[in-house]
Length: 569
Ligand code: C2O
Ligand code: CU
Image 1 (spheres, protein in one colour):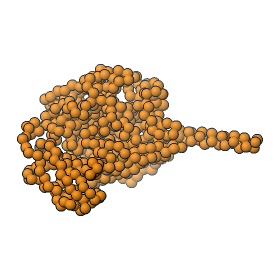
Image 2 (image 1 turned 180 degrees about the vertical axis):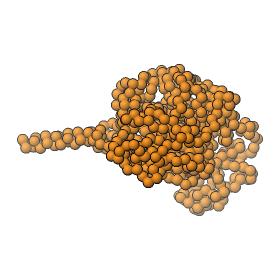
Image 3 (image 1 turned 45 degrees about the vertical axis):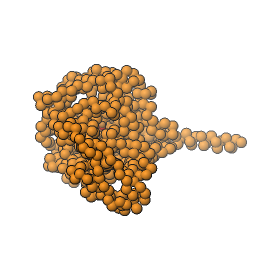
Image 4 (image 1 turned 120 degrees about the vertical axis):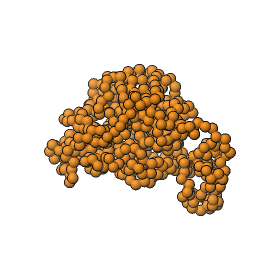
């Protein structure tokens, strides 16, 4: 008996020690920063699936990832290329995939209207016309965005172009050009992610808790994305060194801007250059969030560590990334350019239309809205004429800060009621910090893509706020989109039928075009979602099981749908 209890006690003791060490290691020991794999070229295969990750001692955490267990590959695109996406939803839930920052047709945008049912392939494509910059992609299913982001769905997009390539900037991915997706998570006792607070307790970069990275002793470029649910970051380095901001959401600035701190809200990106040249090999410096001392209204400035807005990281300065300085690489960048690219920005004088949005409601415990209207998928809130240059003003006479984002365009911030627009956010933007009590105006041109049917979104990028209804939508229309056309339903034939490998579609009216094609099986399960399909090459059905299928074609002009049957042999 005595022996038994001693054994038992020893067991307790070792268990306690193991627990102690694992907790300790979570605080003191770094993990190597994950650098997402890259995909490049013009065809991108993205598989969204549920998965799990061993983040900490004990149970694995249920996650979701794209081509992996958490987060997704970095897509490298060249300006001018036409890119084709094969998005395969292997999740157990409907989702969407939005190309944040990208200028493209609304039907390819991946907003809340372009749903991808489980098991379906969605194939948007577009020509990349944006300048070299850092974008990202993420799910955008209304009221599920927070849940799917927390699971880990998302990834970086890097656009390259000739103007950027001509500059002496670091651009060796994963060596001196590093993507950093900043977020945080909380875990319950069985290590599942929790969403009881808008803020996580543990900082996570590219899906790595407590990360460290070795960077070469030279100029290093960091592409930083805030992919939190709500928290803002006031970024700087632990020795207060200055660094250069070289790019905003939509591209490079005219010239590097020297700073010691940069605020970065949810959805925003910033590209910075930091000089590790003077640092000794073997020395360290930390990228920090200097989030202590902010008043209420700064997201993450709340004083509480628990509760719906509580976090162990609230209102403190905390480490984001531990950097070890390593040897310089061959061909190191050792000087920062004095100028970058020549941007011609819109000014208030260019705008012919003015719109004003007010952030309203949001009394504690209730959602925020624009102008007292909950987001409604069936309501178009704004009609924009193709090629308009417009000034939008967002007024936040309210109780909290927000992160305002608009699809389709890159804009120029022209005024902030809180003071001058910082030079570090003087470039092309698609997302910005709307402080408590602040009014911010920007100017944008809505060109190239008119579509009276599919809207683009504008919203607060804080996922709980956008899911809660702080979102609106606009259509861009040209004259043709307004004129109602009397037209008979689209008639088309599918051949061969029965089919073996590919099916081809011909329209009775040779001028007819498909706006959308959806193929479902006999049970009604969607197989393909094909926005404006390019039909000349046929549609591959070789993976389909034998049986009957239905093709629903939405006509480009009338938006009427016609359904026909075909058989897979
Ligand atoms: Cu980053 Cu409406 O999206
Ligand atoms: Cu908000």
